Image (cartoon, rainbow, N blue to C red; front, side):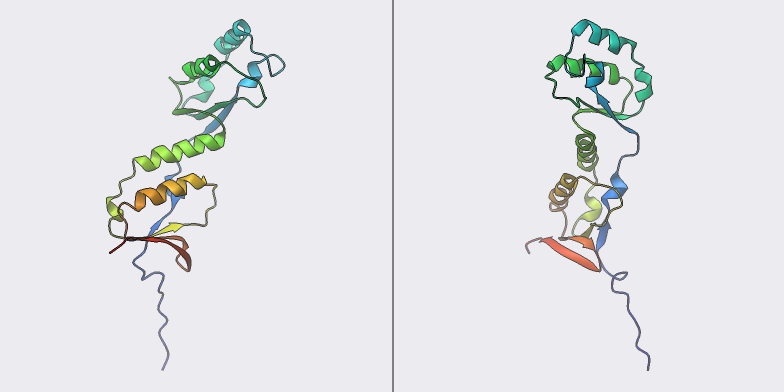
Length: 169
């Protein structure tokens, strides 16, 4: 008599959560303020303003933008504010910092609007193997959110998961 093979993974009550599905679509751009500084370090207000005024800002239309400076220049706060004022009408988002900072902010905003009702009382598997680089703090935020509604949380794949948390009975 042949033994029937049962696929326990496909019959599992686990709900899979893949953060890759929540990656906001769109172009990410880093704007380096050093391009408008003398020798990459010195900001002179009049030439800086003139360079910004003559810059083609439309090329950032619908982009997610991070503003930073790749040199050790000490910039006045108004410099990034001025650049932001040009970008605000045409971009999807602006952050001060690196592209990694931008990605973290995108996930924060995306996850903060997540409808948690489909996860109420469920055992959830947070997918761990990803083709894209997902910021670690996106996982931290996700766990915090899901703990408010889930029955239990796991990380990894169904065949090799790590238990993270279980609600108290």
